[in-house]
Every structure is written in C-alpha cells, then in structure tokens.
Image (cartoon, rainbow, N blue to C red; front, side):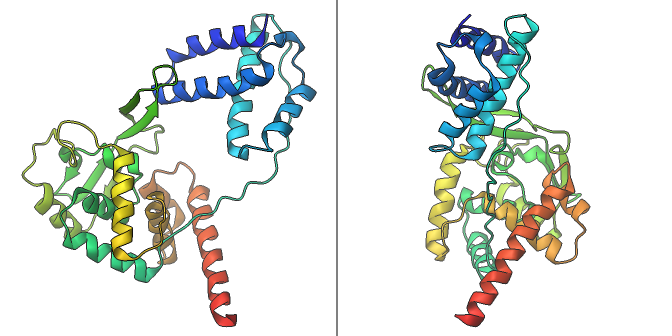
Amino acid sequence: MKFKEYAGRYIEVKKAEIRPTSSAKYVNDCKKLNRYFGDMDIAKITAPIIRGYVKERLCTAAVKTVKSEVTLLKSILNSASEEGLCGACILIVKYPPSKHEYKILEDDEFDRLYEYCKSTRHYASTAVLIAMNTGMRIGEICALKKSDIDFQQNSIKVERTVEVYTDPETHEYHIDVGSAKTAAGIRIIPITNEFSELLEYRIGQMKDEHYIFSLSKPTDPTALRRAYKDILDICGIEHLPFHSLRHTFATRMISRGVDPKTAAGFLGHSDCSVTLNIYTNCTEKMKRDALAKIWG
C-alpha cells in the first residue's frame, strides 16, 4: 500500500479523536509528508529514508516543525505496523539544538505599558493588564467570561482556552473554545485587591455569561495581537510578542523571591523546570545586556 493511501485513512480516523486545531495541523503536516513519502510503498519506508527526509527538511524548516512532522510519520507507520502492513518504526533522530529565545519587558517598559493600559478603557488594554497581573496565555484571556472572575475572593478561574485555525480543505478561519489542554492548565489565580477593583469597575455591568471582551462570542487572539502591537507603538516599546507578557510575569515573580513551584502554579505549568527555564534564559540575557552597557 502506498504511504499516501494509508496516511489519508489514518488522518480521517484521528479527526474524530482530536481537537479541530490538532486535526488541521495533522492534515497540513501530512501534506508535507506526502510530497516525500506519498508514492512509496509503506512497507519500504526505512529509518535511513526517514533520516534523509529530516536532513532535507531541516534545510528549509525549523527543528520544531520537522520534529512535529516526524512524530506524525512515526504514528502513521506504527499504526500501519499494527495492521501488519509494515514493520515497527524504530527510529532515533538527532536534531541540531534549537535555541529558544525568551523576550521580556524591561522594568521601565513594564511600568510605561502598565500605566498606559490603566489610563485607557480599550478592550486590549484590559487584556494586557490581565496578562501582566496573572501570566495567562492569550487564548485563556480571550476565553474569559465574567463568571470566571471572583471579585469577592479576588481571583480568576482558568478552565477554557481559545484556539484559532484555518481549515486546510475549505480555507475557512475558525475560532474555537475548548477546555484547558492539561490538568495543570485548569487553575485559580489570585489577584491583588487593586487589580480586582479595576476589573470590577471595567466589566462589573456585564452579565455573568458574557465573554469579557466581546460579550456573546470569544475574542479573536489575532485581532488582540494587532491591537496589542498598536499599544506598544503608542508606548514607544519594541514589538514583543503578546506571549512575552507571560514570560515577563514569570521572570518578575522568581526574581522577587517566589519559589518556582508556586510560580508554575500561577502559570499552569505541570513542571516547574519549564518556569525556571524561562527565568534562567531571561536573566542570562539581562547579564549580557548589562555587560554590553558597561563595555559599550
């Protein structure tokens, strides 16, 4: 059987088991795999052939992208193996190290952005303030309803997230609301009295079932990112991803003496080593920036 025939069948079965966003990613990754393996007999795909694919793809694609494609490829081949169509896929691939650079706001940038967002009532300003006070992901913020905020206990409940994707077949843009991806992602985040009062002042008149930024439907993260970029322009701050607010929150917590396990609880990390990795990466950059200032 040709690889593309079995892969197409495999994807159709998986669509019923996974989120629409994951399904769209599987389809797109499978298209890339089919360009290389599509007409091959699935029983003749060997580890050396797969390593050749990896070597070729790494010339034009990021390590993370290639890893994702190879993970899907192994799943397809192992499924085919269970049906007796090929041998088990025993594969070890060594990837070049991928350097993940975390970017955060400097203290003066943080203060400038915070003061501007406090002084304006635009929905994006409120979203930025939530990110700066809680470290929440953009999808979690876009999925917030008024009922998720407890103004008496000064806390925010996180249990949903918004995901966006483009259907690879119809090319339609979708905004979906789903549950948090992991158990650690479902959490209650305490907030300060001051921030609780500010939120209540801004959204107190809404109904409990309203999404706090767009009432009857979740906010589009892409639109929020564009509005956030405009805010950075107004504040004279270098364009940093919205996710940098989360990294900034993590770094500020640990640098001020919060233990990594507690910080991980705020962020919804199942392993505090992820939190520490963000902090270590960012503080290393701070040291090098300081050195550059001294010798600059």
